[in-house]
Image 1: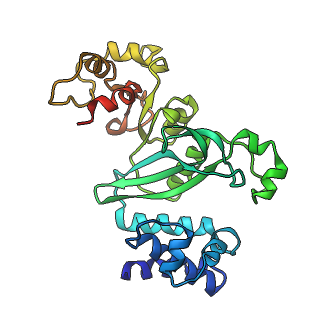
Image 2 (image 1 turned 135 degrees about the vertical axis):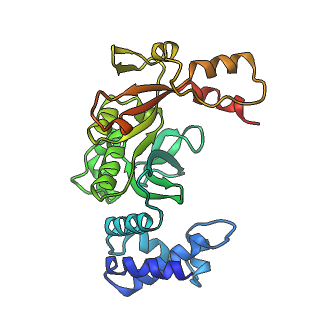
Length: 296
């Protein structure tokens, strides 16, 4: 794993002692290994340890600069994958939990499970180009119930200065870090949980970056002639607006109607960008409703 050694050479200075640095390298080696299951026990066994104590200590007690490692990994990814027309992607995922001690855990919707479960939720930022794709940032979502219970936060080692932030705000923080660090990107994309937030869309426009987001069908969207509901804009979209791809096989009538209602809407940005970057795309969330019907 010559590439892994090169990478750890870049992040070595983020670990203040040699032991956690070696443990982190063994941890990543385990994640890359063809193990049947990956948890504290299996990663420890792959590293030759008798117990998972060392791996757990790396994650919950060892002193190292996690945010610094994040920045180094982002720079490493950009050096290998970076392209001018790169895409920044924000999305969330849930981590199912059985207990109540992990920071941010509560009964909440998990996209992983497709239902409300006891879980943590993380918001992530990925970077994609024609050369490849990878995660470059992360934020843990802390529900209001957690922020309101400072004793519980202290028990879970949540810093005192942490305040409540919505998922779109967490997404903006990660996008800002990427753009401020010079990550080459022409577009950002997100699903309805983020696209439905007008402040999120306005922030992207202020950054002069194109975006493709999903919004609810009743979302009010600013257009050249004024504001209008997204589904109304779709119904009156010009012929040169970009529709979603049409499947080649016949579809049920209900699904076909949903697809017609979910065409993309091309919205000009009123000169806030250069002409070749002067538009963004908004898609209606009904595409999600018919996703199962489109699965072969």
